[in-house]
Image (cartoon, rainbow, N blue to C red; front, side, top):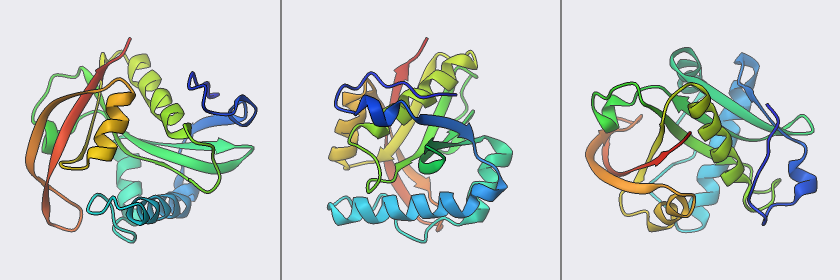
Length: 184
């Protein structure tokens, strides 16, 4: 699937080469690197508590590839971003009818992409959700992460709730803001 982005802040030249594909086993080290680099980038800008480098390994992404979808974004064959797409998220949203797709771990290589690329990945995830016949895209972010919440509000999402005590990969529990956006 070739990328297209309506965000005018992003260079059309660079993004004309943006392509998305499902991740495969050989992508596992790249996914871990992208996630760790994104965690370091967020932490260096004062967004702490959301992600930590080294928190997720290849086993995590392998499991998601078996139960959901993991997508890689590439420019000229070089991985520059990724996201997970789940078809259910009972830990955050509880039991739900099959009307939504759940975006997790949206990440870009900030050293290699222009500003706005993350929105392009988010739009691609929304198109995938819509293409699967679902009417909502949902996601969550750490409660109190005002910067990330504002980012998603700016992308057309709205806050619809809060989840207290959502289990994390390391066994701790955190509170999250729940957001959703209708898609067609």
